[in-house]
Amino acid sequence: MPTSTVEDYLKCIHREERSNEGQLVSTGKIAQEMGVAPGTVTAMMKTLTESGLIRYEPYMGVRLTDRGRTLAAHVLRRHRLVELFLVQIMGMDWSEVHDEAEVLEHAVSDRLIERMDEMLGHPKVDPHGDPIPSATGALEESDDPSLLACALNRDLHITRVTDQRKEFLRLLEQHKLMPGRRAVVETRDDLTETVQVRPDGGEPLRLGFHAASRILVGRE
Amino acid sequence: MPTSTVEDYLKCIHREERSNEGQLVSTGKIAQEMGVAPGTVTAMMKTLTESGLIRYEPYMGVRLTDRGRTLAAHVLRRHRLVELFLVQIMGMDWSEVHDEAEVLEHAVSDRLIERMDEMLGHPKVDPHGDPIPSATGALEESDDPSLLACALNRDLHITRVTDQRKEFLRLLEQHKLMPGRRAVVETRDDLTETVQVRPDGGEPLRLGFHAASRILVGRE
DNA sequence: TATGTTTTTTTGGGTAGTCAAAATTTCTAT
DNA sequence: ATAGAAATTTTGACTACCCAAAAAAACATA
Ligand SMILES: [Mn+2]
Ligand SMILES: [Mn+2]
Ligand SMILES: [Mn+2]
Ligand SMILES: [Mn+2]
Image (cartoon, rainbow over the protein chains, first blue to last red):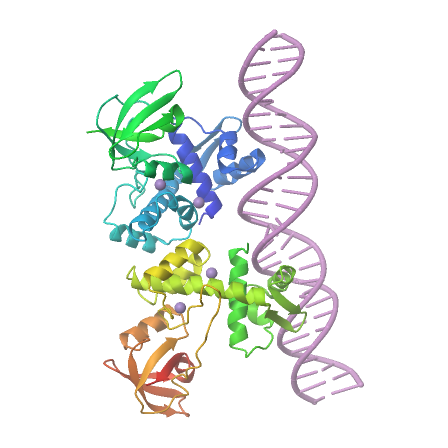
């Protein structure tokens, strides 16, 4: 059985592969994301290759094998179900559950996670709008546009926030910019690189392009 | 911060100290309980001594320091609250929660455990009747007699079962011999070394002395 | 195309935890 | 009192993970 370290590396590679359109993920990027030294990653890539979880081309980067991807999806499933459980059943705040889940995802048994899934009514997304992989490891990502790419002055509903920083999530909560809520993008300014967004029932907010790109919306 | 391995060693020493009336705990006993080689324990005892968690007299045994005892009590608190949460809130069986808790006790945060405590209404005992240490680490053990030491033909109520084996717990459940239920000890035979117990509403059962000693009762 | 910069890998070393087997100490029983 | 048994500690070795710094490869640019 994989260690929790291995599980975290797999999650990381999985995430980078996505944000990369299937390109190889560089060891440098992994080192940066995991907060470890570059050499540490090279060593780990060898053991992941040994275990058949990744394909590794020295100096080029790595890609998950099917087994690696399935395993990563299972960890993601545990992470996201735990997050939703903590919010929905235990009344915790969406800004604090990520860190808890980062640990618990390695500690909950299959039986326990399926019981959570049942209690939650087989949910499709977690508190941040991230899709929850199925018990078989199938994961469907939507391709919703962000506040940076969506139409102006249209009634939108927030579907997902792809930033786990506590302070950021708390700010969005204060402005009522959480998944399930509605908002309108009023202006988008290329000079200041900011987006002005008016949440339904919340204070208007000006976001930098990068921050705006982490809030995804669906047309209604 | 202690590793989960260290936490398990402390729990083990704590338990053995109790069942020992405060005598020193031998490294051999610890090795046996932890399922590791004797030399492994000797090495660990040195690092626990370094950390100020135990007093270690080579060839004699070890005893917890106050810090070690407090830490052990906190792990015990997490373990037992998690067990009760799994039974009470998540509807799991009392026979299966021990193994889950053995892992989760090292993964739940203080914030999460206090939330559980709140949801459960600040309970005093876990599903097996084991007392739950307070948030400050105070632990009060009752000195209830077991089915081996209690009076015959008296109406008793089960308070605690100090055996975590799944199969044993399932058997007791079938016979309605769980904490909170009532029972009468009808006979105690020194030749066959068995105790005949009649649970209230359950099938009568004959237990060996050792098994009987693990079921504690309070007079009513 | 040669040089300098950036990225990656290699090397040497460290901590935590483990085991098997040898050495040592303590206990037991004659 | 002493031999033998039992318990304990020591030794040498292993896996998993990590880092710093040197070496090597790849990239960029003049
Ligand atoms: Mn994690
Ligand atoms: Mn999430
Ligand atoms: Mn444990
Ligand atoms: Mn218990």
